[in-house]
Image 1 (cartoon, rainbow, N blue to C red):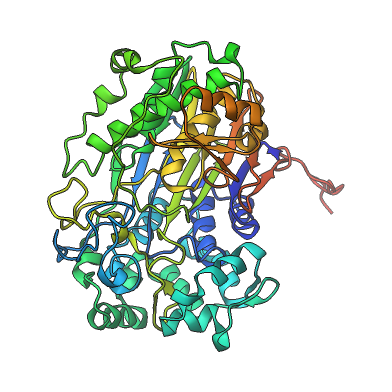
Image 2 (tube, rainbow, N blue to C red; image 1 turned 180 degrees about the vertical axis):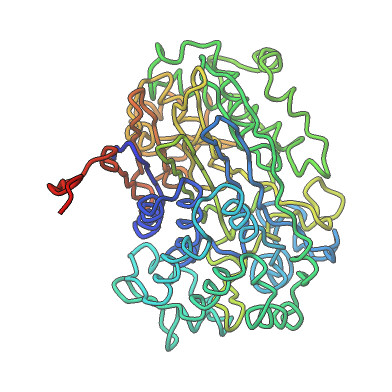
Length: 547
C-alpha cells in the first residue's frame, strides 16, 4: 500500500482507519498514532489498554529522535517477597501461590499508557485530544463485528474471564463467550473515553470516572494506589543507535532490550557476507542463530531498568565488543547456552507503524501483557487492567525481583532506519521475547537480501535464546536437517512472533506500508493532495467589473 501523504499500519482495520481519519483531517503522524492506539483499546481489547504500558520510538520531521517510555512500574508498596513462589526451578519458576502475579488485582502494575499517549498528543500532535478520540468513542458506543481472532481469544481465556463479574459481563454475556460475527458494544468504556477526551490523563482520577477508579484501588486488593497513578512519570529517553552497512539503526533503550539486542546481532553479522550466503541457507541461519545466543546471554546478564541496574550500553552496542565476541563463533557447530532467561512477557501485544507526508514517524508497541491482562475490569469503566507484575521475578534477591518503582523489562523492538540522514524504513511487531530476533531478521531481509517491504515482513523466521531453535515450517526440511547436523535442536513452528507492521520510504517522497499473515494487520495509505494555490473551478466573470 503506497502513498505520499501518509501510511498507517496497525493490527486491526478500524485502528488503521482511525489513523487515516486523523491524517485526512489535517493531523500528523502523532495524532494518527494516538487515535489508532485508543481505537485498538476498543477493537483489540485483549491486547492493549489505557491501564497498560508500552514504548514509542518517534522521528520528527526535523530529524530529531525521541523514545516515549510508558512502561508499567511496580507499585510503591510492592516488596521482593510480596508473592509466594511455588518452585525454585523451571518450568514453574515464575509462578506464585494462587496465581496472584498473573490473574486478579494483585497482578496489576502501575500503568503508563494513558499518560504517555496524552503526552505525545500534547507535545507533537496538531489536533485536539477530543478530536483524536472520536473514532475510539464511536467504536465503543456503536460497536463493531467481532473477528474470528478476537472471538478465539475470548474463548481460550473464558474460564479466567468468568472469575471477574465486570469483565464477564462484557465478553461472556449470559455466561457464553461472544462469537465471531457478533457485535461488541462497550458503553461504559465509551463514557471513560469521553472523560479522557475532556480532561486528558487527569480524567482517570477525576469526576465519576475517578470515583470508580479510586473505589477499585481501595477495595479490590491491588497494590496500586491513587498516589502511584498520580506519581507515575513518562520518561523521554534517547534511543540506542548502531550502524549496519551504512544504515543507521535506531531503537528503544533499556529497560527495553530489543534495540540493544538488534544492534548487537547486526554488529556480529557485519563481518560476514550475508548477502552472498543467501536468504534461508544453512550457513546464514546458523550464523544468525549463534549471534542471537550472544545477545540473549548479555540480556540475561545486564539488561533491566537502568534506574536499578547499571547497563553498559555503549560497550554492548560497540563494534569493538562484537569483534571480541567473534571468537565465540564456530561456523560448523552450534554452541549450547545453558542459562535460562527469565521472562513471562506475553506474546499478546499490538503494534502500530505510522508516518505522515512531512517526515514524522512513530513506531509503537503497546500491551497489557497477557491476553486480557489480569482478566479484571474496573467496574463501571470498561477499563481492562494489565498483569505486568507477572514479569517480575517472584524470588527475592534477583536482578528482576520486585522493587518499588522498578520498570518492567521488555523485548519491545520498535525500529527506525536512516541512510545518509534520510528515512529508509520503520518497523515493529508483537511477540514478547521473540520480537528482537524477528525485527532484526526483517532488517537483514531489507538490507542484505534486497527484499521488498512486503517480502521482508512475511519471510519465514527463526528464534532461539540459547537452547532449542524455533524454525518456521516455511523453511524446507533440508534446511532444518542441515541445521540439526550442526548441532541445533530444531523445533518446527507454525509462526515465530506476531504480525509485523512496516513502512519503507522511497526517494521520490512516497512510502509503502506492509503487514504480514501472522496477524489481522492492515496497511492504509493516503495520496493526492490539495488543489494548487489560487485554483478556482468556476472563475467569476464579473470579477473586477462594476455594475
